[in-house]
Amino acid sequence: MAKVMIIGAGGVGGVVAHKCAQLPEVFTEIVLASRTESKCKAIAAQLPRPVSTAQVDADNVAETVALLKREKPDLVINVALPYQDLAIMDACLEAGVDYLDTANYEPPEEAKFEYKWQWAYQDKFTEAGRMALLGSGFDPGVTNVYTAYLKKHYLDEIHYLDIIDCNAGDHGMPFATNFNPEINIREVTANGRYWQDGHWQETAPLKENRSFDFPAGIGPKQIYLMYHEELESITKHLPEIKRARFWMTFSDNYLKHLEVLGNIGMTSIEPVEFEGKEIIPLQFLKALLPDPASLGPLTKGKTCIGCIAQGVKDGVKKTYYIYNICDHQECYAEVQSQAISYTTGVPAMIGAKMMLEKKWAGAGVWNMEQLDPDPFMDDLNQYGLPWQVVEIDQPTGMEE
Image (cartoon, rainbow, N blue to C red):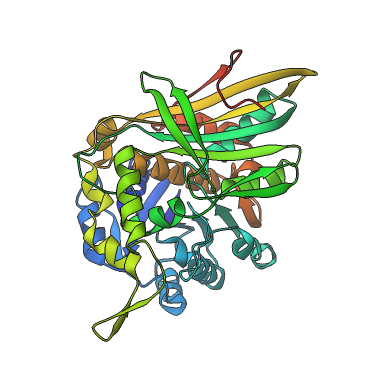
């Protein structure tokens, strides 16, 4: 049906390549490109059918445009670093190619992520007749679609939304992050932020927390309030929401390591001089930590990511919980990756499939909750991320 180019050969890039390769009727040709082509070749060697590889510096727009014009893909799946989103969007516009990513743009010099930079591309993509789909991972991504699905089928209005992300897996390492360490630590050490009554409220990093009892035998875990980009787009496109929050679990071991590293300045993104050179402490720390892609064979346990939505249906207050359970070892058996990369990579493939099949179509820049959730939800069940919805009629600790 179509040719796709995947830019990025980390853990998520590997999952996307595996899942696209499983659907030759949709992804007729696949090109896997990265700054380090050897990583692409290593992933390609795992796949059940031949794919092309290429070297590209995604920060270099001209270089990326040249590659796109040579390969002529129908769609770029960007699973490189969030710092590179705008450069890849520019390249797609110049080369006349549709665009998809899994996380919004972050400026390298500031630990801040929001959609304003990418939403500013609305007119450019509309005028070019091209589609840009933002945040087609799990959170953001599936959580946005979950919200749209509940709104379409279960609730006339959503008033309170809590997105809850639990990784109950254990990799046995003293300290490691489940995705890019630099991005992970920047997110976790930032102020918490949530939407309430038309305004953003801020909290100190990880200050607000509570216990939540997870399904599928995971049980009670401590969850911590953070900021996550899907809150910004969901509250924009569903303005009836009075409060929206994002929560994530962390082990005591992870938090203690993070506290110590922060106390000695190792999580800072401010340059320091060392032996006549400027270095970024967090980037140096990243070089010392295990590669998240190496955690696949080590990680055991499950993830649970979902949304609790409180609202009204036919004038009656209702609460629903929609979620997915994913097993780390099952993911590794299928695509040689742990569940964190799997839960991001599968939705990236499905979002691309939606675009190539024209089930999701339209010029401009789109967030996931703006599009019909039903075909995406069907594909989640079919391609590895089954979900369920339960009505909640007892207190969960997340009430209004």
